[in-house]
Image 1 (spheres, helix red, strand yellow):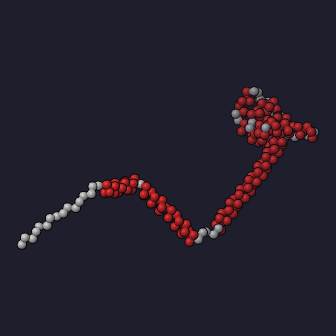
Image 2 (cartoon, rainbow, N blue to C red):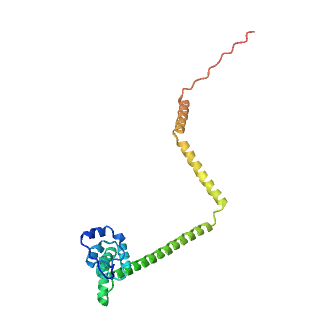
Image 3 (cartoon, rainbow, N blue to C red):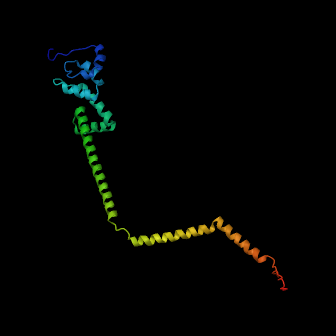
Length: 204
């Protein structure tokens, strides 16, 4: 193919080309009107590949607006407006592909910095917890004698509680009531005279 000669394809081939975007590399031989219909259907990675592969032709007139669209989609309309305003103030102009790469790099650096800060915070917190554990282990445990005294006090309180519960239980109350009835019956019963037994006379 003669260098510098552009191939013009009719609209019939546009849909076929769109279905085979992964197979495109150097598109410098294609007419810009055809590329203007084709490249907007590229993904970000496909567009990067095509631009890197096309060495002799500057595709910026077509791809610059596409990169601005990617920038706004990934970083938001506010960030896009801020970039445009800064370029106006500084009276400078950059390719949107370059702006996209710079913004991506900055965000990656910011994420790394945040990650490092979080890592340091986690390490600091882990060290603090470890220090607290060491302090707890360093404390002297109470003596065995004090434990025995404490244990005996608890046991005596428990025994007193059990005795009270035992005395207050229904069975004990019934036994006490029966004892009281027997005592009352014994005291209030008739007093009987003792029988006098008649001893047989010794007739012999």
